[in-house]
Image 1 (cartoon, rainbow, N blue to C red):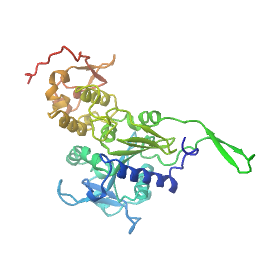
Image 2: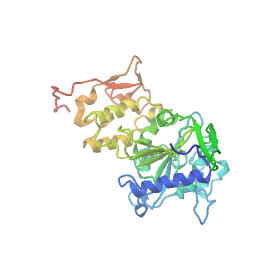
Image 3: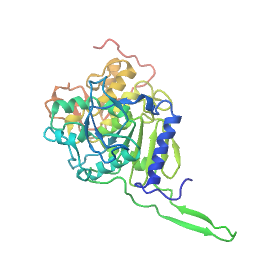
Length: 379
């Protein structure tokens, strides 16, 4: 089924396929497509990668206006893994220079690929965390971290460097697919059949990819309206309706919390495990993922917490759902690993009864759904 050959990731044919995926989603998927007549408000800062009139332009663009009244436009968000390499960053000393110009050759390989993809998709603006947040300004970092929900939810699409371990790696070039071509000339008209291995799956390439083991990426993926995953074997399209591969096959969406851009709603509606399952599965999964800095724990899930607050019509101080406070407090360590208390002055202000205070995997006590009465008067 589909193409016998995988398209080279940095060719016009491949980019044409990506543009077609976007066009089809815009035209066919009313709940997560993109209406160009209603462009989103731009983030605080974006990279201006040029347009038809100036295709070589590359600089940091500071958007005009206050939040809620900012200039509008179409932009792409990059989801990537920092790994053990510090990528090119915007700092207090470099922001003025970055606003004048950034040389393409000075970008790390991963960022170069992101700029190339953005230009090929016909989009002028690109958001990259390390360049669009002032990294040595704690106030700016906290302010922008609080806006992650809107950055990814409002993006035209997210491009995910799923197979790259750090910014020094390209995500466009990849290994070719092995195949055998069988030709039949007996009828006078050559007829070719291609035989090849089915290859790895979306679960192997994306779910098991290095990027999706990172804590920040969990909410980036959950909040994005659609994502193009660049893996080591092929490119995948993911939106609330379908998963596509660049060999032209497609799959139905699994009905989990990542199946819809309307988190925590799934593609089929509310979570199938009942009201409690939305926060239980979200927090348990998040605590399995890695973060370079433990102090980032409350920030890297803040966007999903706001969505959960809207879903339950309540608040969730320190990861405890106020309307389900009894159930929400019944978390425990998962497995034999002892939870480690995080030593950071901000984290130490979180109460000891919150899972946000600790490192290690957690789960929730299995309480029967029937014949259980909850005390609703707890404050």
